[in-house]
Image (tube, rainbow, N blue to C red; front, side, top):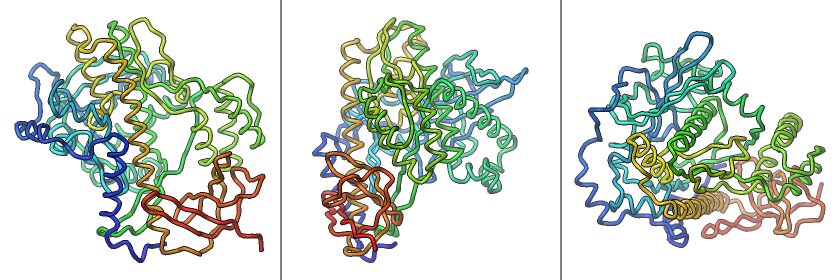
Length: 491
């Protein structure tokens, strides 16, 4: 389906995004003081004392259109089936100083905001896509997490240190995944670097081992539907599904490992840290009820392994509705949050990942908690005390959680507005649909093309997630992102 109108769709969505950001306490623009500071930054940071690892076959893997490159990775086989895996994270804190106007703006928003029409970056693009980005064929300063894994994915050694690195190949998820899955030849950027293919396959193998180990420990197999807008110039042409693939999973697994090392490293040096947690679900009874509706059984007390077994079985039995079931489970699990972990403390772990020690440290160009963690890591490496008092870190953790929630709401709002804009010319048309949510607040349905969700007006009793029905589009509101369908009687 295409949108016959919407000539100025991008500008309309930009206006909506800015309005909603301001309403949520987020700043869409950099203040003059930050821009003044930016003018004085003319070169990437360097450190003569850092290890020189520019000769390694580093590569980045990210979205096709990503330019804010936070991490590189490389692997080497060791005797006995072990693997050495290095993850390099852009040293943003060498450029963005505490107390600066740039830091203040990043600390206000705490995250880049990715809307359907415009990205509002945490840091100005001169930094985030330039001087602090791990761009190909450019020397950059990084913090390297150097890990050794046994053949079963168990971590046997790890250290963190500053190093100079050089990205040998900027790869994209889609093309890299197609190659890893044997569906396409290697992308040109991959094929052009001698030895990179072998090292990427090794990374892929290690990532699989790490994922398998986590899932044996109860990490949850969840998959939700994500869409991204497709523009033709400034006109919204459609929405396309953003699906999981082998390359995305590879990066996710490596970053989970690096984030765990960062958390444990700070604990080992008796420094506080910001932990990323998903608490043991308070609404486990509702998850039990949801599983029962799908023919599964869960124990009365929260049990990650039992939930993982149910999810695996549900995906095999009903793959078409599994993303909708996953979304329901995610909502019942509760949102992730940042909390302070003091030395010797016992902050909650991450229920969904089945890990106890977990920070956010791998995306400092995009997330402010990662900048805070990077400063803490540097203090640990230098043998200095924490640059933040515990009370200050606790307040920052709460603020980052609040602002992240606000940013996600902005992104969802603009995404819904884009969907409403796309469907507006199709009022009165009929679609096949599937129920994606059923609660006291209402019933939601999704149509397959375009992949859009809306609310069902006057739903009959008894509808459950996965029920299929025929609907008619009856209302759209682009400003508020509302889409309403009416159920049609069976033919």
